[in-house]
Image: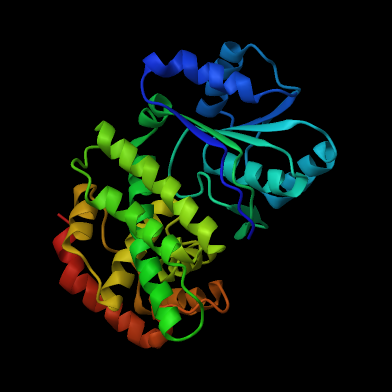
Length: 349
């Protein structure tokens, strides 16, 4: 993974900053640009941005998926051009644009409309390939413009998922240290510190109110730190461990399809921290604050389904050693049921 950090991250906190925010955006658009956006709220926001900057894109691409096939289609159209890629939207738009910029080498300007996980500026793109999720190298955006008003007005489930996603850094870094102890990988201390700092920015925030400016900033800054952690590490280890393997297994088995990725890894993280012996009461309190159950999904998971989840999780990232390797599948099923009995009941009201 090669990571070039953004030249700037411009954050507009209030409407008072709007004029300078737009001026700064205009200053980086010194060439024709291709606009990638969604089809609903992000498209409406795109029209507002176009109106304010006074420069029309050469083309607007409304994305309905983040498929690898769509990346290749766009790559063939713009490779060799001098276009700037401007991406306005949520996770799918961000991930596809980062992969497209990586393949074409073109400049990328990113304006996220939601923050749900650390894909915001990370050098990794999660794309769909024949209904499966794949993680591929992506380009960190050259410029990031974040309007906190649009983020604040996004559905609460996205902010909650983003907070849960940051909690997964704690089980991920614990797994990383476990793999180091087993002499499987090396450790980058700066990346490790960034990842843990990102999680504790949310855990130690003075308010867990979704409308509180300090909580919104904690989520935003935490996600930026997570991306930097992965960039410094040169891989996703600082933010992806056993909890992400379980999430990948749930996706493959088509379980928990009603949950956002951030919430899935947050739920799984609580269990993984339990078997790592690292559960912090604050983590339980935060999940309880947002009514997040301790179960992997909202579906009833019987023993056979649980066993299949752990079996598939082991194969999700070949070579990535985690705490799951310390137990057999049957043992993990027992531990999960013990976890639900001892911890889960206290979280669900």
